[in-house]
Image (tube, helix red, strand yellow):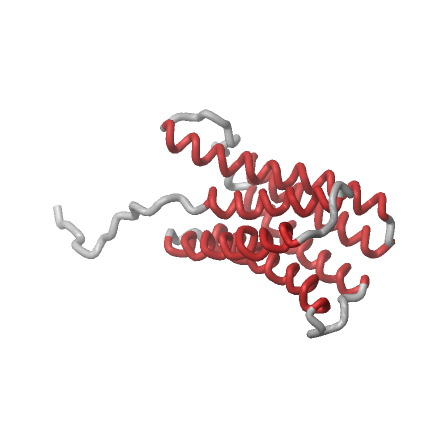
Length: 194
């Protein structure tokens, strides 16, 4: 049997838990604010830049190295979502631009909802846990868009509660992957597709 000397075995770690935790923890914190429990603080903005933004971009690049188009697209895109969201909040405060109008925020959130809904289709070949993350995130984006379109504070607060669930589901999915790998058995089920 001929041996291929150019074949490289992938021994790198799974970057998905990092990306999912960056997304999930930042999403929970922002949506605790959206639900009305505390103000939009530097804590949320810092999480958006460094964990929601940078950590997800790093995870996306690592997924690229693993030849995972879905993971690369998802983590890099949502990392850049967090950076653009922080930019939308911070740039007007720095005097770089006017505050985004409600109409432009509706368009921004709706586009992210459409993108997420399309990415949800890809999860149908992955596992139930990711399906829940992407389905609940699609709903979250559209609830936030409707909240901005109507100016209805109740919708924004409801979106906050839904966002907490979405973020928590991403945290669960990440920790399930970590623990299942560490223990070499299913500790937390992901609902694998057969």
